[in-house]
Length: 261
Image (cartoon, rainbow, N blue to C red; front, side):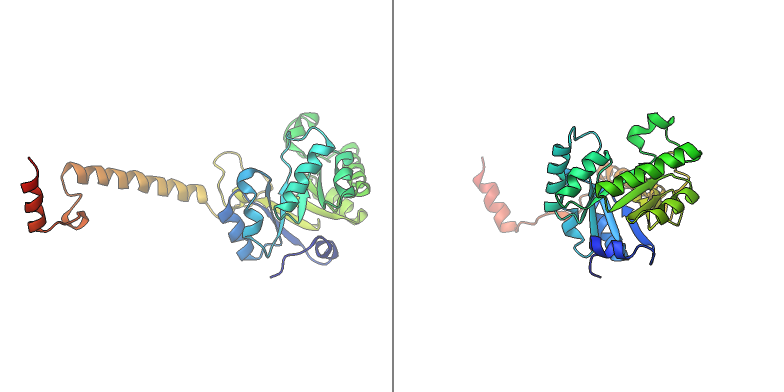
């Protein structure tokens, strides 16, 4: 499967849903690509820069890490580095002014509306945004502002599904649902939620397809048992056995013994 370009993603608006997942590790990225995922994303960090090269047949998005950029120039510099590392698109959770600076230089930008966790204090914490007329209008206005700024897509986080659907109909760019219903252009989940990695709070919008946390607990228990068996073997002198030893012939050993005082 050839990776989808930004143009091809935009051509899918109103045609079919786009599947998008956030990964934390290289193995997750490779598995998502093998599964046929349309888009894969992760934060742009030194340890993740090689991820795009591991999945050459999948649209890869690097996200700018919140708090690491104090200006549009800083964000643009990192965005260009991420594109050099193989990104097809860049997530930027900053203002329309910053998004515009990136878009002006040809960087395909995914902006953010709705709940933005680093800024959640403005809406009273980690909660849905858009459940009142005023909030819904603010989400719509922000969406239009990012559209005008040149973003090609919007992540819509925890916005009421009916509001997200209406906004999707009123913008020309892609909308990406993270807890915002199934009528956006794309659906997005974190691998940690999808794979059941979380041990604490599981977001209401998340669907758990596997229980990796339980499997990791099982494997940890097996590690402890293996170490216990190893210690017991040492104590009862059943390890190492002759099969684990390096041999020496009787003649060579005798020669050695005759050579030492």
